[in-house]
Amino acid sequence: MRAVVLVGGFGTRLRPLTLSVPKPMLPVGHVAIIERLIENLVRGGVTDVTLALGFRPEPFMQAFPDGTCAGATLTYAVEPEPLDTGGAIRFAALFAGIDSTFVVANGDVLTDLDVGALVHFHRSSGAEATLHLTPVEDPSAFGVVDQEPSGLVRRFIEKPPPGTSPSKLINAGTYVFEPSVIARIPDGRKVSIEREIFPALVADQTLWAMATNDYWIDTGQPDLYLKANLDVITRLRAEHSWAHGVAEGAVIGAGVALSDTVVADGASIGDGADVSDSVLLAGSSVGPGAHVRHSVVMGHIGARAVISNCVIGAGIEIADGTHHTDERIPAPSA
Image 1 (cartoon, rainbow, N blue to C red):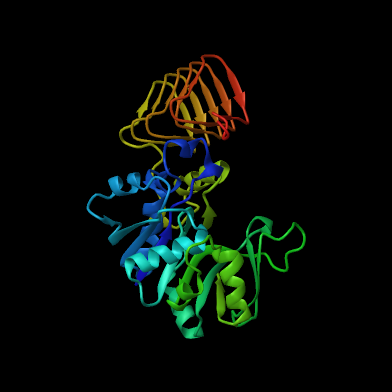
Image 2: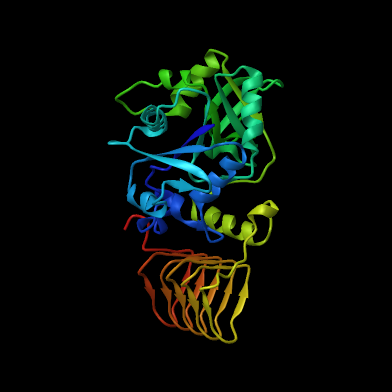
């Protein structure tokens, strides 16, 4: 089984973290998002993965120099210009010569979905395309699916206004496609698979969907990226995803209070610091006596500084004794 993984986006929602690292290369529990995603695809029977690249493809190629990841063989399809989700899928599938049933996955989603079960459902339904669905409390930020009990999709509504959704089941970002879907995507212009192709499939009654309650999270925003890390170390995910919070190469000072925190290889925490519900990425540091709460840190936190609900980008120096709450430094527009 082959798969296309969409990893060519700019990661705007995760800035400033993505100013220095492409979103799918950010670690969750010490393992890159893209590697966790591919691990799950491989468990479901995928053997070959084509990465649909665009913005900054080099870090992906450097991370997997032998052309493999988690047991899958990689192909790098670098779009010359961004053509939205549909255009990226079309380009990658044609580049890789995909000519049979294949899987598509959004590169910022982590899930424990049984991909093999999704493929089986797709084939048994005789579908042209099949979506994985997951329930959420507020579906207004997602593509909402209204379906028959059999799984046939009646309506696909991309990001409905709050309070108008017919369902709480959303497009969870993993699909199974027949090659005929590629033929539906126009060449040479931007095409949204969600806004243009899925409604056409609904009209032809060839779009099906399978809902599950598996672990699922969109890591594309700082609070959700943080939650994904904490889910891993607190075992809210399946047992095979569990990881220790503190990497072997991290440096932890004397008298440090540390709880529910991921500390990467190469990160350091000074004496007497207090860190909780946070992620300290590689190269970051927390000074002596500093307090860090519910934050993601790439930069350096000064001694006795207090940081709460913040995202601190690479190379940023937070001055000694300063207080910061609900900030992204530098700001996403910087």
